[in-house]
Image (cartoon, rainbow, N blue to C red; front, side, top):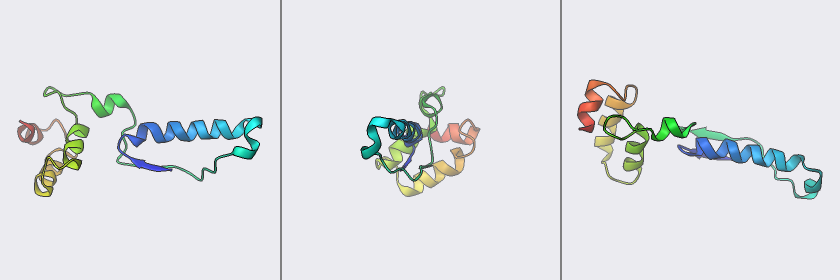
Length: 97
C-alpha cells in the first residue's frame, strides 16, 4: 500500500487495521494480503501538516496549491528553494507575502 502527503496519516492507520483484521479467527478465509507500506513526502501528524504560521498557512498548503496548478513549475521551484528547508526563513516569508 502506498501514498504521499496526507497518506502519512491514513496509510499506517489502514495497514494497522488490516493487520488487526487478519488476526481475527473469523477472517481466516478473508485475509487481506498486505506486503508492506510506503509513504512519500509524508504528513505524519495533522498538527504538523496543517497548523498555520503567522500568515495562517503551512508548507503543505503551498504544496496543495502547486499540485492544483495555482503555481507554475518555475514558481514552485523558487518556493522549494526558499522554503523547502526553512519555512520560517526571511526569504520564504518574503516569498509568501
